[in-house]
Length: 498
Ligand SMILES: Nc1ncnc2c1ncn2[C@@H]1O[C@H](COP(=O)(O)OP(=O)(O)OP(=O)(O)O)[C@@H](O)[C@H]1O
Ligand SMILES: [Mg+2]
Image 1 (cartoon, helix red, strand yellow):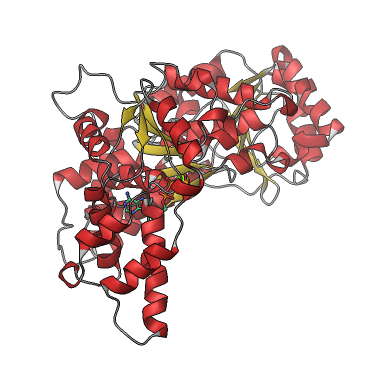
Image 2 (cartoon, rainbow, N blue to C red; image 1 turned 180 degrees about the vertical axis):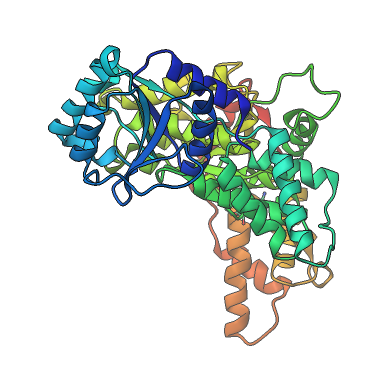
């Protein structure tokens, strides 16, 4: 499976008199195969070294014993510097000594600078490689390729055949659409990791089904994740769990085919993102989750708390890494909840949030991956104006308090969720009596009524719910001024989501 182009590129690097080559990869085996093939036509001896095996020849069909006294890094470098014939040396897992071992770094540097004399090429292979400044300028970085769509499909076929052979020739079942989704979900992974996930999905039941894809996405996320700034939200929602927001639902369903680049949508710009602003408890976070459910893509949440956490290091670097991860996870939804907490302009943080905003806006302008951003906010006073300028996001939606019809729907959703049937309730009356309630307050009323019903040992009924509604002072009353201000801000700047 070793790529021919990788092989050629690597051979050319070795031929171009570069003394040090670094390959940062988790795929040591694959890198070694490529190197063996790349060095074959060069007629140079190929050696490999590791702390456990010492130095040994790799280009022979019979395996020889390791050379004596080459176990330690000092010893092997000494050996290399004395070799009088130009050779290629692979050093596995050499990274610990590149960190802070001046003698090793100097030894490597001397071999490298003496290339004209020795002609040795040293190739470092580790899962992580940070070259010290002394070596950086004389090192070429070689990047291993990730599998293409075609190669991923071949991997799936290979593993399906393997499964078939060991299961009395039963064929692995799947559908073309699911297969395409799987291929797209595996992109961004190495050959090795992709194969592991493919095996997992096939070997349990000999089938590749659509309901296994979220697990693939989560496993992929875990393999790629480097810090805790992005989280994978396994729980998404269905739009049927969201009452109202009909305008938003229509807008999203129109954009779904374009987001997935289905045939016939190539000429349209791919949707970039949207913001939901509005009253507290109006269902903004719920709607963000529902976009992922509706479009059938993973939901990744950017946690601003961790982003700014000193423990995680440099804020902008964390953000760039997170955006990169989102690209690798594409197609996906990147959800930024309560954006005002992360991006509010304040003078107190030395301009960090301003720079974070800048990084984010630049990325959004340049991004051509299927990453759809969903931002939510309930505090317009703290939103940076640059963010809501026209053209940055595709649309800003205003989520207002639910109208009577929507309140009926929300009651229905939350009663059904708890296995109560609508016909046993007077939804009309409930909706009428819950004027000014948010979706979240309606849900809370249902929950509180269930407790009352339990305490009174009766089944939940309309009267208990009405009593609970009368007891509640909705936020819209307590914060009526804020809601008026929100509405007037939203006019002309936003589109009504309800
Ligand atoms: N339109 C709705 N339909 C159904 N349930 C709703 C709706 N709005 C709110 N809810 C219920 O209320 C819960 C809380 O709502 P959610 O967290 O989505 O509101 P929010 O707008 O994000 O609020 P905040 O501004 O406080 O973050 C939801 O999980 C859901 O159970
Ligand atoms: Mg919310």
